[in-house]
Image (cartoon, rainbow, N blue to C red; front, side, top):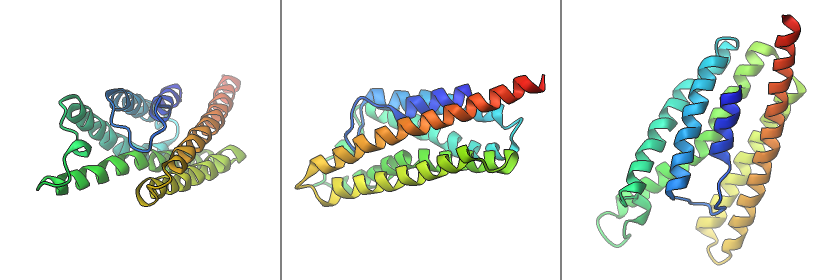
Length: 190
């Protein structure tokens, strides 16, 4: 659970609250975060088999993060291609992959929570995690809508991304409390 927690911490917290962030720091922290989540899921799935359902998604995100790290480091980010050339299609596809990758963390969290519920049962913590995840997804979608559709007021998307950062912090606190609960139950079993 520690590796999953640290991985989520790296994936969640960024210095930039812009909707689209293609910096090397962003790509590198995502890559390291997803690698930590991968090994954490592998370890936790020994006790909670249902958690293993998130493993293929985490594997995909490792490759996704690595690809964008290489593209960004080489200066070939699809988000920086000029839109007035034949490369506009590549730019729009790249944008879709970036947004899908940013959204994928919420899908991974949902799978982890579902896995915990399958194996350990529904608790107040897992219910809160599911609600927080749904709220984070909604705020992310709203931020995207405001970023792309209402460009006259760009500050709204940044405010929503700030709210999303706060929700991520609340999520991590709740996730950590599950970690502490499971750790204390393991100690009680010994």
